Length: 223
Image 1: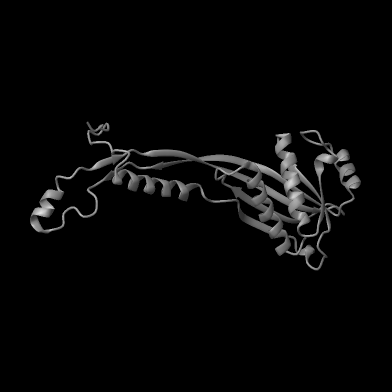
Image 2: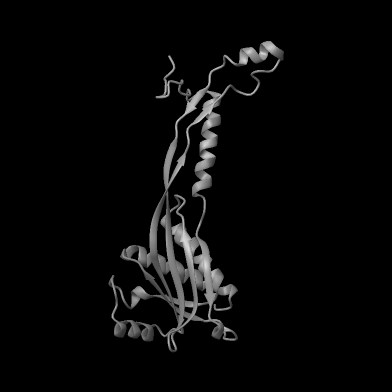
């Protein structure tokens, strides 16, 4: 006996061709809603940076509450900068404790690192978007209704099925990244990004983020 939805229509058997077709439609909708990687929304380059040679040494700072995420992020960014010939060092070597670092200690860390620039990234906002795929009524399979009057008449007796709605959330992480020159701490570059996790590992998400930022810095001639 077929199960019935709250609407009174028969529910779709999970092993039927119509069920498989409906599952494909829902799967496509889910993928379309959560497949976006990190994107660079806006960026700015200081006109004073024009004509300056690319930076060869950078201190990487991740402003993250979780110390493990901070270390992983800084290590990933350091590794990506190394692919561009930049000698980068993570800030946790000089300021290992989580939380705000006093200005004197921060300046001391920069001095000990012996770098010409500081690349700083912080999470600005985390939001969640609720996505709803409406319920669908799936009619008779293709082929019903052909063959003249009687074929059409017979097709009208074929069953329709209800595919229930699907509700899922998408997380959006907004971040701000800035590159400072240590001489006078002049801001040379800034960019805002949005990361939409796709279900991949945190490590791979950080890797894609680092590739995007370093690629943009290289394109602007800063590394």
